[in-house]
Length: 529
Ligand SMILES: [Zn+2]
Image 1 (cartoon, rainbow, N blue to C red):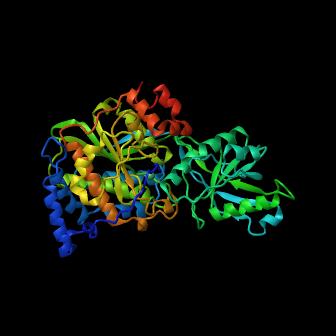
Image 2 (image 1 turned 120 degrees about the horizontal axis):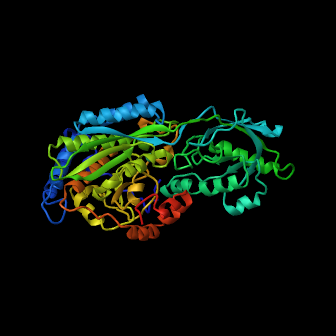
Image 3 (image 1 turned 90 degrees about the vertical axis):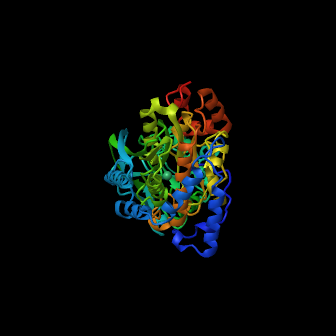
């Protein structure tokens, strides 16, 4: 859900079509040897003949050849399935992560924290109750609860439907008295990264207004066509949200809007629905992040983190978001371990939980490791499915751009060079970013990510296996390069520097809208002033 400045589409390098070098055609083999020749001059940093070229040459056959990654991913998605933080499925996923790291030979442990709430959707039901003419086309509308939405009373909430358009202030004011009403909010079909970003940025204002004006519930029009249902949360701090909310299948929501519009002349306020959402809410509940580690030989107390979240929503099986990248992190650990050479610094491979509830697992990790933050040299995160990696989002800084290019030089023909100086809320780098640690979030092509976002259709078959393997090479080389170069890739930013960065990138506005601003201002979250 990051803002993407641009998303150019390059075709994949010819070299990478096959998953195994054994399948290369003669012209591809020729291209490979040329690539390897060009790698011999590449180093991890400007001041040394470092190891990035050699590392890349060793990592590629390990990852692109036969590997357990795809079978690991199949087990996670098909056999464990959707894994909402706090559920038994999530506990199984943690076991999967531990077993996955153990099989690679790296050290592994888990770190516990408390998630404020445990949440499970009940039998959500949305029915048109009046007028009778409106139910003629079918009274039942397809809907699911938003994640971490409060439940309704057992027998539901019944109320008139008020269409508040896109939920902007002017439209809400025009809508009149909202007390006790069930609000219907429209949406555009989401197909770009900025669309997705807006799906998160718009609701907080609508929710605040709905609560203030005494509305009973909010119905969000689905942003995907063909009755596809999905959910995320608008709460973003792990706590239960302030008002019951459901996502209504787009076609059903649009029909409801037309019924409301048709009734406005003759009988305003006559279209009524009943929303029943008996969500099961309890907690707090103990959760775990899974941490694999390869200790550095020269500066073991300096750490490079490669991370991805392991949790998912459960309508689908969380393959694109984010099972494939959890598998990527384990595979990168396997490959780096298998090259048989230690990096100068320690590399930690972390599978975070609680991400979908507002990056809770990574926030808790940052809090628990507060005294180490001066020595956490970088955090690399993958969280955009299996689309081609075009570069990295550098978290509001440019000083890390040149050294990153140096590290990725051995993959020059892959065009992983669109590094962007943006900074955004949206995945597990967030709290490291606010602490001034250099962060790198993979910029990836949208591919089929948004079409299946958090939906029933986010399943194993959607993952582009070849692209995932190439992304794994990029992830492993980036982690290796930052860990093995002589100098740190960038300094830890001071609070004063972060204050400038937050303004320049517009992260200040994001934090205000999403409810993080007060904590940031007071120093409760992020680097202390
Ligand atoms: Zn994700």
